[in-house]
Image (tube, rainbow, N blue to C red; front, side, top):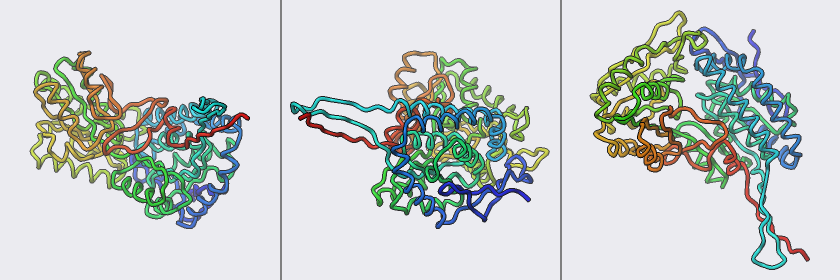
Length: 479
């Protein structure tokens, strides 16, 4: 009988009702059975976090540093094992899974250091004899809701700063991929985290997520997921006057100019659009190419796309793993049909792939002759589907790139310092990439977008303090 992985509430592993975690590379394989919390259990987790907050928020920096550092060390020591777990439950290739686990360890290591770098300011007042101190204090109980596409990195980059700055946490991972979050919560508990400081409630968004949104005792919510759910998080948070942080959709452009190195352009777009099965909010699904290089670029990218090896996430030869589940696969194939109906030309991929195991395999798909008004150019597909749009010159390409309701990431491939510099300043995105894929970011610098992609302070790096702390200004008269 498969062991039930339980929820963590007030330092105790609890739960009886469980759901199977299925491997998208082999739907006959159960990765594990994970508990599903009820609304009442979620309320208990919130209450535990609230009760633990006074002591944890005033805990010593060495205690917090040691716990986060131990967590980082164990994650990195187990990166092969945890990477395999991640790849089995989400479908990333094993190198991608190990890479994501490594990043999670680096994030905990970074915030272990940030605990020791907590700082404020001392300023003179305009009034003689009065001093001014500016400090940062933890927000309180932080609700964390994470998506399925980065099942260990995103929980890490939310949990680590929340704990580092003295908050307590209730985390709800995506129902599709509970295993990776369960693993890092287990590591944190064994690293010495006091009971109630971190609570794990796995289960349905309609039950667990909604209970978090409805609770007046949740002081802040950090959410990554769909635009529709993000709007619900915002509305509920405004009602309770709580802080909220949203990372949502993207329809990220990559501009390829006539002067681009063809090899760099093809590889950059292939990695941006198709690796991790295109299931990244930073993936580039709009490829805007100027006339002089267009035909050569399309021919080379179509060949590269057709030759990408799709298969089981754990197999060494696999470059592109499966789509995460049947619902997402249907969304991808529906958009492929929409693209055909809209008049875009399918030049590579688009077919379901049969392998030795039954899984959700789809050959990466490339359209050309697309326009920026087509649905495949405006709506987030969240799969290995990209469309090429022709532009006459840089100015038109930039205009097309910015013509979107989203603004997470934008890329350009060029050897022109003039155009690269202008694009970095004028691309309407939170992150801009020059001659590198749009889907690749560092753990120690800010992450986030603008327009419909993000709301609130940036995530990661020292900028995480903007969300996970509250600024306090104190005045003292000396005599």
